[in-house]
Amino acid sequence: GAGVSQSPRYKVAKRGQDVALRCDPISGHVSLFWYQQALGQGPEFLTYFQNEAQLDKSGLPSDRFFAERPEGSVSTLKIQRTQQEDSAVYLCASSLERGRGGEPQHFGDGTRLSIL
Amino acid sequence: AQSVTQLGSHVSVSEGALVLLRCNYSSSVPPYLFWYVQYPNQGLQLLLKYTSAATLVKGINGFEAEFKKSETSFHLTKPSAHMSDAAEYFCAVSRTGGGNKLTFGTGTQLKVEL
Image (cartoon, each protein chain N blue to C red):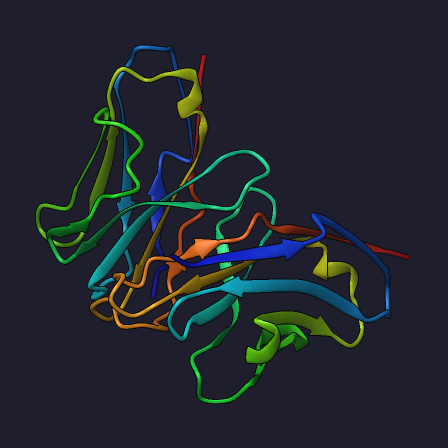
């Protein structure tokens, strides 16, 4: 009965380092989404998986961002050569159905990433 | 393309007063509309959703929203504010065929005063 779990909750990295953020969706949820939320802003879409397939990565801001979901469950968002503008809260969400309109998304508490 | 506009980044009400948070949407196809609430250092919690079944949608914690196609609006209301309602509220839109990804507004911070 657990919700979406994200780890770590907080991550501090130096500029230029690589980071990996983990998302454990609700068991059985087919769809998984990553969003980026800058301070004082609404979340912005990054990428979407249906099972293990990455069907939409149009929101990834650069090729330094990479996401995977190899077994259709846990997902990892990786950011290479981090920059200060990458500082944000990264939210993961999952939903039960295969991209059906109106299906609610369930959000984790996010990972707050700070780049020094 | 679809988008939402939330009018008023900060709204302050007295405890017991009416809460009205405004959201206008833009969508080339019939939209699905959502209101989410975010408490500090937490993720987003779904308050309610509109999926064309009924124009007046009731959600959790006494909130409701009315879909008005003619005004392209989906305003969130609650008859009587409670201190625990203080949070940030986001309106969001999605559509079929887009993988159900959400497009969010910039949010409205609700403050409830004694």
